[in-house]
Image 1 (tube, helix red, strand yellow):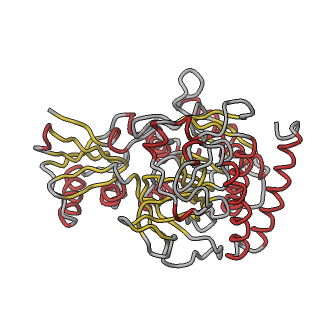
Image 2 (cartoon, helix red, strand yellow):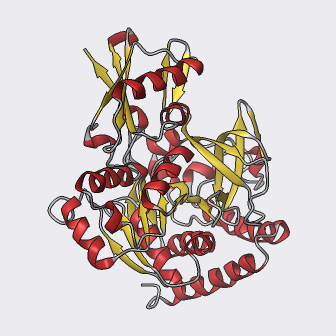
Length: 437
């Protein structure tokens, strides 16, 4: 399509020219500010055709700071009010996964796809290196954009690609994946953390990991929150660099992407990012923690002004060793995706950080009785480690030190597959919290 549509080709040329300029100056703040200024002018024009924004305070004056934050719920309640046009002229149609309860239709034009792809390519080029690679994409291709993003960006960068999501019934499964890895010998792989952890466990059980890891040098995790301890363990298992590849959503496009140092950098040429701390909204200053709010400069079919993502992030306090001038962030998960247990609020990030401090643990499940009368922490141990009692005792001690008291901590050899499907399909409370009698 990009090669047959004259308008798309012109958009691609302009985006490449702009990206070359950003790459050449390592995203110098002055250059980024000029790009933002130019894109914001176009965004105001596009948003004038969006009913949900046109009547907001501050819109007529084009005063972004005067606009109220647009919540995810408001967009989900009336998605047509936040779309510029019908599906005429749309290149691809996606919907959010609905992990928070309701799906959101998200059409994308060629300009949407080009802007998002090239902004990510600027960072992933550094993480993947300059030479052509064989890339395997273990992400779902249906409805969600994650696999398309990985494929499109890698094709733009000149890499060979293979789609091989292991939960595609009748087409691809774990056995098929073994044969694919043996023949294709991927050097880089994109996968959700849960999927990659399950794949690693399976290969260990079969004794096939030493063979299949020989070609893999880089693993890029996306679609879920990944924690540093998880990445360290998987990196040791695969003898490869394991990176947190990107952060974003179906609605917003990609907001941050990894560099070669493994840090997530805000893609500020395509997003005006703010951080909400309580009632205060401000720029992403070093060390700030709060809800990420974005104005999507690259969105055409569904422009978003001051969109509250619901995700809690921390802005890096120190510059990244890679040398890029773009701010870095750590993603902690959804602000409302938490569990309150005996006065302590637990999140995917806080509990996962405690659990995965022990490299012998590959997953966990919290079982809660009706009325929160009791709660049990169930740990999944790696396939090649003994000592269930010691693993449970160690986890209990770490949690107690952090103020989290469990009625019981048990260790199992395998957790349900629902906790491993991954790639934007998971809600932490739906897949990691279960009710027990």
